[in-house]
Image (cartoon, rainbow, N blue to C red; front, top):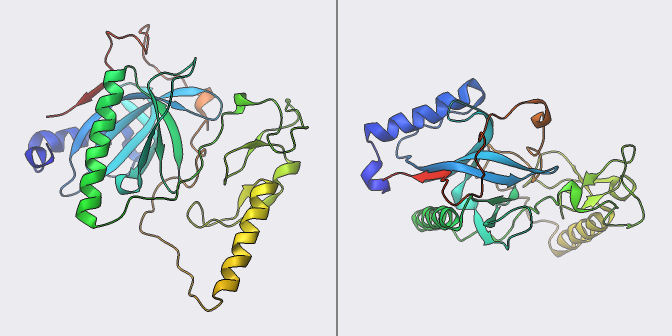
Length: 273
């Protein structure tokens, strides 16, 4: 499919259309050899609640964003290099069906498709693109993944001390290492994790102790070993929950009308040929 579409006018038009929908807030997407293979609406498990997100699958990246007006205007663009992606199938829940996790070294999150057929199509195309990229670059599949953030509503108490109860005055926080929902007292520490951010990030007390122990052990192994930070993949969000709800509650997402997302007769995704 990639060979068939690359350098074609229809592919250029499709990519230009995506760029226009994101407008000035998005990054340029048209580069030599890039092909838009498919697109669709998936439900993404965000920090506060599941929300619709538009996804675009290219042969080398996965792009997604928030829907302002479907097929006309999107914002909050995020770009994920596919060679850093690992997929994991997940069971259904009462709220979400046809789920899987998209895991990378910088960000991991759960999405769901409108039907089993659409999930199968997404996974098939994603796996093929990832396999092709890894073969082309000679890289091994990624083994280090950012922890997905546990949704706020999953717990009413701190998942570390199990004593503090959350309320309008007692805020929830997320550990950037394990993704747990924790209270302020259990997440006072910050730790520098270069894969996630150039700045020290909030971590829970348990992860902080573990990270400090690992740092001490690494220093003892070889103090003269030069520090190396992998900067091969940059340009997208630094942690697993940063895009979850910023300004979402204040804007109207004009989708999907009166249609039911999990209705079998409705298709929310399409793949090009």
